[in-house]
Amino acid sequence: MKNQLIKIKNRQIWKTFVAYPAAAFVILQAVDFFIINYGLDAKWLTLSLIILTGGFVISLLWNWNHGEKGVQKFTNKERFLYGLIAVITILFGGYYWTNSELKGERERPGDELVYNKLAILPFDNQSDDASLTYLSDGIPENLINRLSRSTNLKVLSRNSTFILEDTDRNSKGVKEKLGADLMLTGRIEQSDSILTVNCQLVDVTEGIQVWGERIYYDREDILELEESIISSLLESLPDSTKKNEQVEKGTGSSNPEAQAHFMKGRALSYGSTKEEADKALDHFRKAIEIDPKFAAAYVAIANEKIIQAMFSTATREEIFNEARTAVQTALAFDPNSADAYYVDGAIEFYGNLNWDEAEKSYKKSIAINPYNANAYIRYSAFLGAMKRHDESLIMAEKAIALDPISISSLHNLGWVNLIADNFAESEAALSEALDLHPNWIWGYVKRGYARSFQKKYDLAEADAEKARELIGPWGSELLEAAIIFIYNNCENETMRNKLIKQYFEKVNRDNYHDPFAVFYVHYINGDMELALDWAETALKEKSPGLYQFNIELFVKDDLLKHPRFIKIMEEINFPKEQAS
Image 1: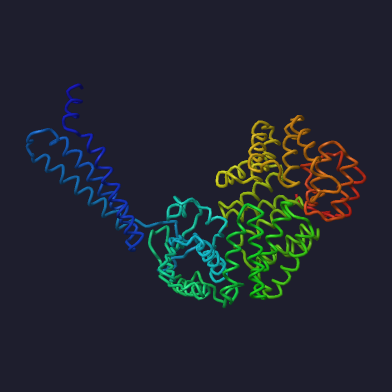
Image 2 (image 1 turned 90 degrees about the vertical axis):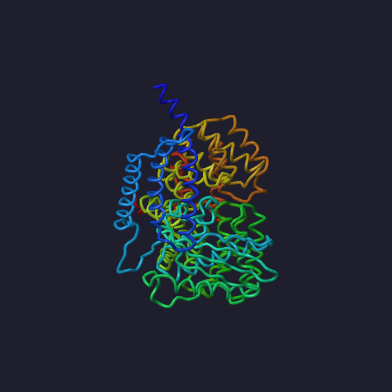
């Protein structure tokens, strides 16, 4: 045994296990590069691996027979072994090449590939001008909107594609993380005042480029640039992916300056601060000032205001007056705007407490565009609030199928599972969202809810502490009430009382924004009659949080059976027949 080990050492076989895999990796990377960029058959990658495996065995034998210093005789037996290994490798490679097919990945009617799902990634801004970020984000977003209207493809929204890690912005990452079979990427380059946009469409399953285009842009007409991309791209797609009917160009503006302001607003509207939201609204309003018939800009304003309503970051008057006007104007200019309808549904739900009209608008949005994840998310949250939990979860799963890693779809899945008493599932969805968005305050708060209901008190309080760290000394009235609820549910009276005291040092009858949040803090504090006073104020002012009165998870029988609360519920008039 010792002699064998000495022989292995002397013949330096270890070099085969170190040097050969390194060289093989470089070769495979080169083959993959040519497959992706020059349209080679994807089977070349596996064939190369087969050949390199045979080569590894030959390399191992060669070092065993000739690895020592000096001259070792080249025997006939050795020649035979090398020849046998080469023949086996060639036969195996030939069998693979002639018999392998990518089964199960696609259906193939005739010779035409059938694609199902498209991921459009943010373009890479390789210019020195950071202000062009609105183009690197805005062009892909407009392509998402256009292609979802003009093709039968399920086009993933930016909620998923724009948050992919850089390491996953490739064929493998898009296929595994998003389940897409097509990927559209782009690169923006600058030379003097001329911008060049390089685009390519890649079949991520086959690993081949389906389409590519190089388009020049002089910063004057973004609309012409997008139209060039769309028309060229559509020509490259199989006929089965195209809609037969004539599709409008969309709700964009024909004025390049208005369109540019809209795109800048969209880039800012996904920010996390009120300052970014206000700047986004300024751009949308400027776009409308330039083009008063710009339907998409009206929808964007209304949606931005609704988000403020959902998280109680502005007063009711500030939110709904502008939102209602904006969405109705959008529908007047574009009666088939799916986005306008789901925003209208949110206004009816949060603002008007009109449950029937809210549901009609959500259904209308989905009917117009069945691939719009945001419509399923909003409808799912509505159904959950109406205690129609089975339907709510179905809508939530549809949103996940369309946007598998977006914060919106995962947030909603966590929320509707929470209010359906599926606490473990809620925690799992919110944890997945937080893995992707580690600075998401409401994610920690709502996961804290789910954990507290499972009596995971230490973990729930850790979530509350993380949320506090991200918020700073004070958040919105609703956010502060939510954190108080976590400590109350964890039976931590010391922290609950401390936070309640701080709350009422800031909030009183002459200084409040959200009466529903104030009601809830009084309720947690055991001030039933005072809490009901605030509940009546919330009803009078139609607080956006009123729908939560129908979520019994957060209240007890002492409130549900109180005559004053029963009267409030009768006035709100939640649907009497609610599916289980």
